[in-house]
Image (cartoon, rainbow, N blue to C red; front, side, top):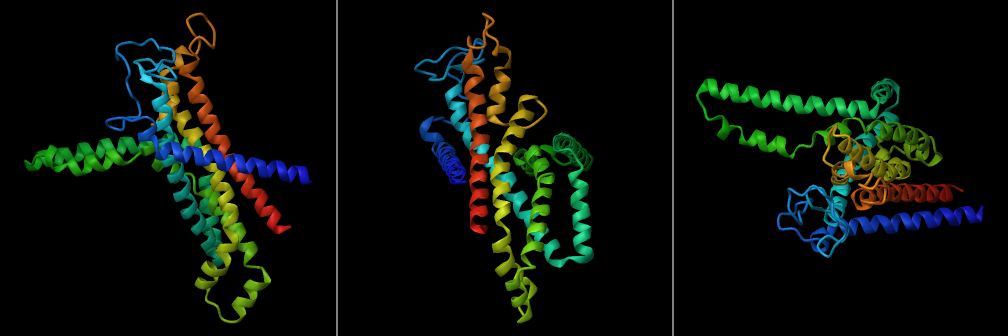
Length: 315
C-alpha cells in the first residue's frame, strides 16, 4: 500500500512539473522562438522547396515541407493547445457542474428532466457530433453571410462595408470549439449531480437545514465546496483528451486548427523516408507525435494525483 501511494505521488509530481513546463512554453513562446507576426509556422527557406531538411542552426529540429521550422511550431503549438483545451474544459466544467448541482439540489421533476436531457446528449458519439456540428456551423455562417449580402444588395447598400462586423465575428469563432462545448458538459453534469446528492445527505447539511439556512446559501457555502473535487479530477484528465481529439481531427482534415495536428498532416507523406526507413526523416513526425503524447500523459498524471489525494483525505 505504501509503495503504491508513493508511486502515485511521484506520478502527480511529474504531472504537475510537466504541466508547469507547458505553461512556461506557452507564456514565453515569443521569447523562446521570436516571430514578427506571432505566426505559428515560420518559414526558414524557400516555400517552393517541398523537401524536408534535417536539423540545422537555422532550424534546430529540422523543417517540414515548404521549409516550416519544426522547433518554432512546437513551441507556439503549446500556447494553442493550452488555450483551446483549457477553454473547452473550463467552460464545460462550469456549465455542466452548475447544471448538475442545481438538479441534484432541487431533486424531483427538475432533476429528472435535466438528467434525461443529459442522457440524450450522452448518446451522441463525441467525434460524430463534433464533425456534424462543425459542418453545420460552417454552412450556417456561409448561408447567413450570403443572405445578408443579398439583402444589402437589394436595398442598394454596400455589402462589404456593412458586413464587416459579421465577418469579423465569424473570423474569431472557432466552429470546433463551439462543437466541443456543445458536447462536453454532460459528464460534469452527471458527476456533480451524484456528488451533490451524496453530500446533501451528510449530517452537517441536515443540521444546517434544520436551523433555517437557505437553499442558496446551503448550496454555495456548504455543498459545492465539498462536492466539486471529483470535477477537478475529471477536468484535469479531459484537458489532454480534448487536445488529442483536436489534433486528430486536424490531422484527418476533418476540421480544427491544431498546430501540432497540422504539423503531422504536413509531414504525413514523409513518415517513410526516401530509403524506406522510419528514421530517414524522423523530424517530420517524431517531435510533434511525442509532444502530443506528453501533453496528454501530463494531464492524466495530474488527474491521477488529484484522485489519489481525494481518496487519502477520505480514509
